Length: 248
Image (tube, rainbow, N blue to C red; front, top):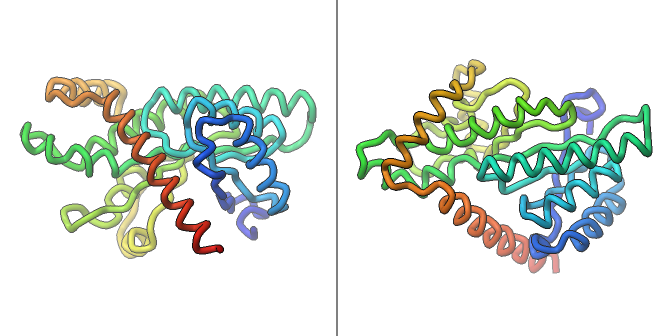
């Protein structure tokens, strides 16, 4: 809360029941209930980026509630989130002019791409540990180019499995201006212990060429996006159920 009060982020996210991922009305009701019950100005309501989720993001933003759009894998999801936040902010601003606007983040998942696809990359003599970075960069640039003053990119799923990559690899590679990075404790410790410099995002042309190579390697990114989202939703539901059991 101290960081929030000083204008240095300080938001804490709480997730709506992911079982509502296809129910916009239930997501809005749950998000509004959590926001009211917690009663803190630095709470962000975390909503999965599904079709129903986009509707809920817009509706909650219109009420002045900060939102964390999560499970972002594809550029199309990011664009839909941006549209939802823009619509919600306009509605809020119309009702409450000259008041602080609700903030939002678009949480781009990173390392899951490489865990899924690195073996396929090796089979095609292509560099590993790259798809997650390039995909996240592509989405980051879409968010930055939209220039919504209340919305920022957030890089999630930045933990590293195994010893092939440095523990802080994804965090270091995605140290972009105006972005937020979340990470496991081991990753944060490794990052603090190392030398860290801001990065300049690779060019659009380089990103386009990279994904051209990926396509020629018979990697269907649309299928990858769909599979990762479905798997992410399943993991969210399982984790949420475990938390609820523990609380009982």
